Length: 121
Image (cartoon, rainbow, N blue to C red; front, side, top):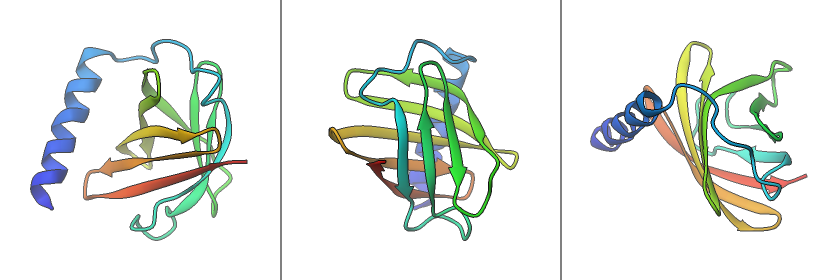
């Protein structure tokens, strides 16, 4: 488990150093509000909404009203990778479109990782 966290942390560091700002526009297929679940996330951070706009991504947890903006995003044909600063910690999220209404992926933070399951609202 620790080696996976270190591996993802290294990937996150490389991604951040190659581009320190939001690059490109979010594709239409991603745009909108997506309900998410992170079953093995820390208490209070297991569900909420990820909001994809034309040029930004926001994470809103179910027990909070604050929008956490992404600090970096990379968009590919059927996937999106973004970094958000959640309560002072960088969280790397990597998602892949399964179909028009669902995405799956993983999020990694300083002390763990969780599978992400998203359903379009």
